[in-house]
Length: 349
Image (cartoon, rainbow, N blue to C red):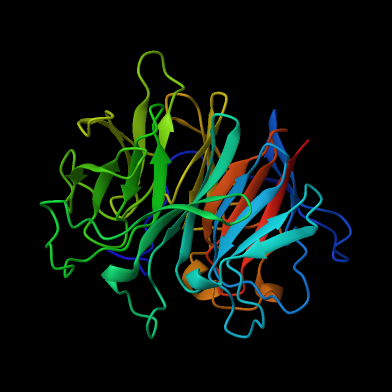
């Protein structure tokens, strides 16, 4: 099972209320009731000389600024992989040329009075578009790009060979209330590594498989505080086409369904938004039941379409959502795994 596999949809039907006029002046509207959104494709305004690569991660800070991680287009003169925009989509700043090809998961976290950005680099593209497990990282940095902490290959883990020869290509992270870091090896050996806030290795759990507690491409994860009691770790078990819940010490708690190649999560109040790679964005309630799917394209050609120019993309439809986040007003931002990159704002109406 891999990205070239298209899995059949399950759960609620897609909701698209109206498409834009041929002139493009009228925006598509999707969803229903309190979950209705106006669609603004290509929301962000890139500076001259910069071209999107695959847009992977997306997050908002306390000032309402939006951060996007992308791989950088082959024809781009500027190689910054982290790009920051204001609430209107205007470019503010960028950095991160060291992560070209590998910039992937993005998590923004407030710690005390300061905010930090966590970038996960899969290592793809260095060298020769391969993956070198000795050069894949989690990097914690300030909102200006100053590095604070770096975690690489898990030599301390008994699940990995100490000589660095095991497959290791992390995709995303989550942060526990006590500061512990959970790093998902989503493209490597499919374990989740747990570290202290200072980067000290604690344990590995998961590993490749379909049984309870096992994972196949654990692509994204988040600490879920919505249910009463202790928070748990919610994992996008992507190739198994399911969500899996773990306690904070790595014990399997249960499964949830209704997703289609889930990539990651973001939570606001009782809602979770899930970018489903196979051409839709899903909204889940506090019990992880599907409320509705947004922008679903049922043609099944998303793997081919993602390599095309943006003029080929269908208004009001997603191609391959990879990252998504709510902003402070309840709008949703979606970053897609398309060669030319695309960031869409779903404005809550």
